[in-house]
Amino acid sequence: MTDSETGSLTPHASLSGRVAVVTGSSRGIGRASALRLAGMGADVVINYRSDEQGAQEACAAIQSLGRRAIAVQADVSQEDDVARLFQRVEAELGAPTILVNNAGATRDRLILQMKPEDFDSVINANLRSAYLCTRAAMRGMLKARWGRIVNIASISGLMGQVGQANYSASKAGLIALTKSIAREVGSRNITANAVAPGFIPTELTSNVSEEFRKYYLDLTPLKRFGEIEEVASLVAYLCSPEAGYITGQTIAVDGGISMR
Ligand code: NAP
Image 1 (cartoon, rainbow, N blue to C red):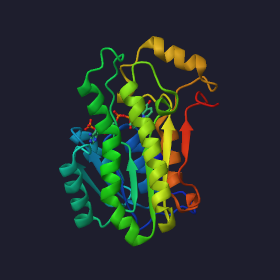
Image 2: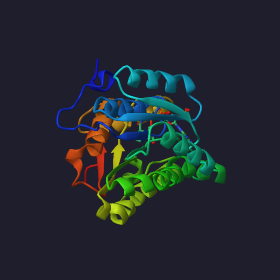
Image 3: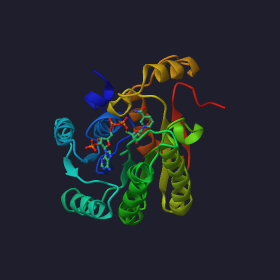
Image 4: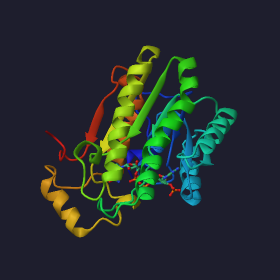
């Protein structure tokens, strides 16, 4: 059993009394991050779009750690859904001061086959969502004069990727959004950072070809794929009090493939 499953308490990193929103946390990296934050004492909002069963299971896992948790259905690329999500969070748990913008989707196509709707839907799911949620959470963070924003980007946003012009552009945009937010609200004790995972086996990557998997492993110094817990532990650290002097950074969790 891993730390994120047991939610074991990290010493000196208490998030007790804090409310965290993790978008797209019914499974995968988001779920593992939500469990880590709960293990550090935070009450956690599980958000999902359609995976209700996964969201309820994640909620139950957090509640079994003795923390409060609610599951809220909302498509975070939609303004009205985001407003409803944050209204419910504030009414039921209080204003969140931790936000992990994790919800993400792919629609891989070579550029000639990529339709405008393929482009727009990925930009909206990955980038517009982070803007909308950050704006919705900001008032509470400013009032608390404390906040942690972690955006889950990707090494595709650093390096580009064949067949992922939409996804790579959304993740590069997320990195620039992170830096702008970090500059805007740093004086209020709010940090914003991006985490850029490499290849992590999840539902999102389940359709990736054997050929690409081999290509990725060949180029990766650590010669293996990453694990969701290895991303979640960095997310948890960046949300912790100890990470208070880190802002505007993009940190890769990728086995070394994107190093320059
Ligand atoms: P995953 O297992 O497919 O999980 C994605 C989560 O996002 C699900 O809970 C999904 O719920 C939710 N979601 C998607 N669109 C949403 C929307 N519009 N509103 C609300 N929730 C939404 O994927 P993952 O691999 O854990 O990915 C998590 C993040 O890591 C993504 O941002 C992804 O781009 C990034 N990332 C992943 C990898 C990797 O190799 N896995 C690499 C780099 C970056 P529903 O199914 O209910 O919509």
